[in-house]
Structure formats: C-alpha cells, structure tokens
Amino acid sequence: MTTLPPVDRSALISTRRDLHQHPELGFEETRTGALVADRLRALGYAVTTQVGRTGVVGLLDGGGGSGRCVMLRADMDALPVEEATDVPYRSRQPGKMHACGHDGHVAIGLEVARRLHAARLPGGGVVKLAFQPAEEIAAGAQAMIAAGVLEAPRVDAAFGIHLWNDLPVGTIGVMPGPVMASVDEFEITILGRGGHAAAPHQTVDPVLIAAHVVTGLQSLISRRRNPFEEGVVSVTQLAAGHAFNVIPGRADLRGTVRTFGGKFYDEAPQLLEETVKGIAGAFGGSAEVRYRRLCKPTVNDERMTRVMADAAADIVGKGKVASGVRTMGGEDMSFFLAQVPGCFAFVGSAPRAGKASPHHSPTFDIDEESLVIGTELLTRTALGYLTMSTP
Image 1 (cartoon, rainbow, N blue to C red):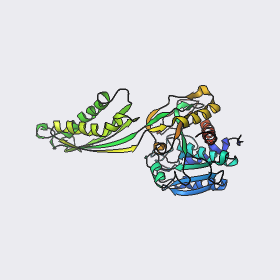
Image 2: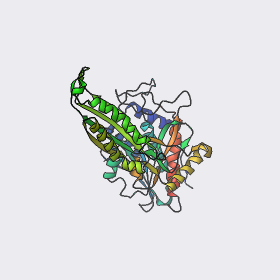
Image 3: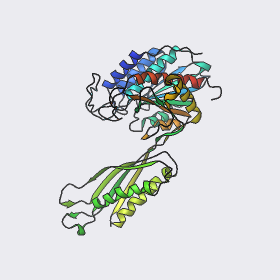
Image 4: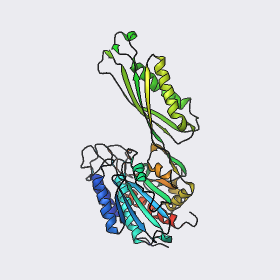
C-alpha cells in the first residue's frame, strides 16, 4: 500500500493566498506559470513550460514509462472582476480577481505533486500534472491539446476538480454522465431602416424587432425543445441607437445557449437562426446570425467516476458524497474528457460562517478547509486509478 505524507495545510493556504493577491487573466499567467514550474522542478518533476502558450506540465514517471498515465488538471486564470472583499490577501491587481477558485486549484495541484512525488507510484505508473491557462475564455484546454498534452506519454485517464460554493465545505459532488453544460455563443445583427421617432411608420424599427426576437427565442425552450432535455437560452446584451428621438437602423444582440447534449444541442444553431430571421422578416427587416460553439458538455465516464466517488467516500464519508450535482455552467475540461475517459468533481467550499458568495462575484471567497479535501481527493483518485486491476 502506498504511504503518503500528510497534507501540508499551512503551505496550501499560503500558496493559495499568494496567488489570490496576484491574479492573471487567460493566457497572461506568466507569474503563476513560473511559480508552478519552479515548484515542480524543485520537487524533481520533468517540467515543460509554454504548453498551449502559458500552460505548464509536470511529469512524474514511476517506472520508465511502462505503466498507465493519469493526468490531473488544474486551471490557473482569474477573471476581469474588481474585488470587493476586505480580506488581507485581497487582489493587488485592479480589475482582476480570482473569483472562481482557480487560485485554490493551483495550490491543490502543487500539494498533490508534492505528496505523489514522496510516494512510490504503483504499477510503474505515470502522473502528468497539467496546469492549464484560459479556462474562463474556454480556450486553454484546446491550446494544450493542440500542443500535445495528451501525448508523450499518452494519457489514459484524466481527472479534475472545481471548488464549489454551491456545496458546503466537507461535501463532494460527483456523478457519471454530463455534469456541466455545453457553452454556445450567438451574436445577432438586426438591420432595419432608421428615421424620426415621431414617425415610426416611415421606418423599420430594429429595436421593436429585437424585443420580439428576445421573446421569440424563449419559444425554443418552451416549444421547440423536448422537455426531458435540459436547455437554457439567454440574451445577455442588447445595443441600439444613440439618441432618444431617433429610431436607429441597427440593433445588436448577444447571448448564450446551454445544454447537456442531445437533440436540442444538435438543432440549436439552425433553430435560432430560423427564428431570428423569421421574426426580422415579418417586420420588414433582416438579420445576420453568428453562432459559435465554445465547449461541449463535460461528461464523466462511469468507471472513472466510481474511482473518484470511492476516494471521496473515504475522505468525507459516503453520506457526504452528493450524486446529483450538475450545473448549466460550462467547463473546457470537457475537451479533455471528450478524448480520454475521466471524471470532474465538485469540492464543497462554501464558508461555514455566513452566506457564501457565488462564483464570479466580487465578494467570492472559499473556506480554505476545502483545499485540504481537494488535495486528498485528487491524490487518492490518482493512486486509485493506477491500482485498478482493469482500467
């Protein structure tokens, strides 16, 4: 049986707070990446930097590359949010903040690296630690894959976690199947004919068309989607005009579609375009629709989920492992799990005192005991996978 050193809680918290004070946005993680690379080299890992621009990979080979390779992923980027907490470790970078827990993910990844290096990997296994940039803009995972992170040696399974303020600290959410939604982005340009606000009959009003488009897009959920398939359509931006007495000639809308896959996922681009153009045409205008898929649903492999759920039960007890935790938020971990089997779990991080602030909030913070639990979960999951009799 593999003997592990205890979790260094003090080092975990110190690293997390240091990173929290120095947030960096997607593909700007130079300080974070340098810190990660230095720590991994000091531990004895083979380190590769600039993987997918600012990503860092640490490799621990327990047997000359003869065993299975398990990849553990930690995302590094922050958000363009002005922090509004009064904690002593608040962000020192104006307009930037770790408002989603990625500072904790990096700290956990480094502590997992320390513990695994001190242990003998079973079965000649290989651990690949992927510190990923640009998760918040859904670009980092694809960049690392394009740079070969899943090869040399080839990754056989991948695991990751997210500190999660929707769960109380001391609980873990893990389940098979889709756990995070696809993320699609749409942009709509509505073209009409401008004129005087006092003479709307002489115009084709794109603002009126836009209002009907916003309402009409909700029919995709209420009438064009199978009610047994989850889905969300949200228009989040609308811009038109510059004067109170002028009907403009153009209106622009932007928004997102979220699903867990299925028929609605396949049909959404066409349904949205048909709806928008049909409404615009009915009012005498026209529309252009640009539809972009950012990431697929994050889907957990059933067998890999059992490995992670068993580890979770050992850590917090079976009664505190939740099996129904899903979110319509998206994750580019989905790109890794689309290529190799794996699992992505939620580690409860809601502070025990007071009400937890939501992710992406300027007052977001975590209960730092979640760092210890996250470290235990990834460490034991990696070892559990490497000791599976039939992967």
